[in-house]
Image (cartoon, rainbow, N blue to C red; front, top):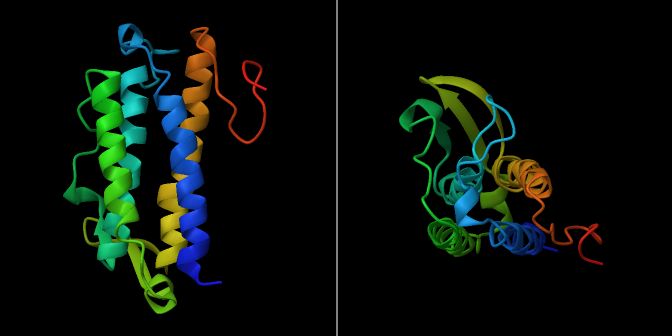
Length: 163
């Protein structure tokens, strides 16, 4: 199996699952946060909507410098805006995934201010910064939903709300 085929299967599954959670966000609770040091519901949802776009960046360049972008994005103002951003980022990245194994195995590095923080094959960077990062924050979002009595959809199996 080609690397792209394995990544596409994972990508499509994780994006569809994430979209189901994002679709549950109520506009009237976007400002809610579980703790003063936590992101707001809008903040975590905005971050989740942006994560797929990192895939396009990883696939299109040999490196990325964290100092080239703002640390935090402005929060989206509605579920519709969050879903639109997520759908666009997901579509853009998926469109760039038709590549050969050599491209996925090519060297990729993460920098901060020109200093290399680490490097790995592009496929590993894609899994780490897109898929695993998305799953991490999606887990946080599922707790935000639960704490607000919003039904949590099934993710890898049944939830307490959906069998």
